[in-house]
Image (cartoon, rainbow, N blue to C red; front, side, top):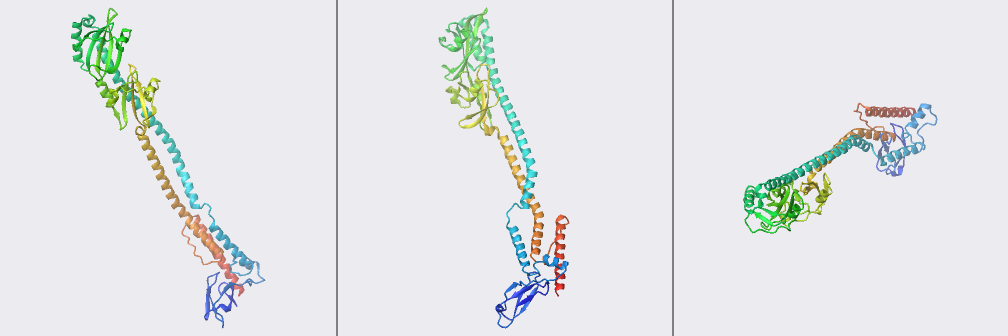
Length: 450
């Protein structure tokens, strides 16, 4: 049983044996027209298949040939059926492709255009910031270390000048115990940190002292030996036998007519100089310390190091100072990264300051964090804008592509929206014109068949 669509003329072959009821209805695959099939006696349900009989007349002019070949869905000829199936397969094949879509390309392009200059700027800016912070930290560290070292030098120099001035007094040069004791007591009273002021002869035997105690033999003291051997100033850090505290002894020669006749020495507490250094701090981990020429601690924030005269000769900053290394020094302190600065004093001591690296460069770390946050935020914003922009371009293209695919398989009733006034709008108008042209061709073909 052959059924012909009244609208487009497409033929269908129906199996009468499968018709149920009095009538059967189905939509034409070409134009969606509803076709009604009257039941013949003994049939149950329609089995609709395209009729292999050619729907195009065997003799037709050039226009009819072109129209028939253009709308293969409207002609159920054996030649048209494979073409229609091939078109459907191509449409499905394109839908299954997993290549990079336009949305992804737009996002990547916008990321490249926006983030590449930002990344270059970030690298350059980060390097400049890093160099500036390193320079500022080094300059500040050197200034602090030099300032503390200058305070040590000033304090030492003040005491040395006092002793040299006293050593030139006639009462001291007389080497008379009574005359010397008067002057020594006066010095101690004026400079209370000098708890013991005394003199010796050239052999190191005690001549006079300010505390009135028994005279002693100081010939075994290093500072006495240094002065008697020709040094203008000698010193020694030790635990005072009188005070039982860390002390500094400074000694100068007593000369008369350019001939050395004795030694003037003062044992003094280091509280004045230690307090300034021990209380200096920078942040949570920055501190300063002072060691003598032998690496023994003179001043430190930990009193036990001072009282025990802890040996710091192996400390990285002390070793760097002995090597005359300048600038910022990076090293490990109890397993932590640290930076420090070291400066030699006039007596050959080492004044050092140190701080944990993370704290010293906290500004640099904050700058890094801010830069990464800014880059991340920029990335998110660019991706969002690119996605929205690409969707605005891709969505209408996809709709037009879908409409073109449906038209290509014979669905001529597809509605095409055309709201854009740009190139996409031009494309929509072109597809609409193509749809109208196909529909007109089918109408002409249908009229010719009649």
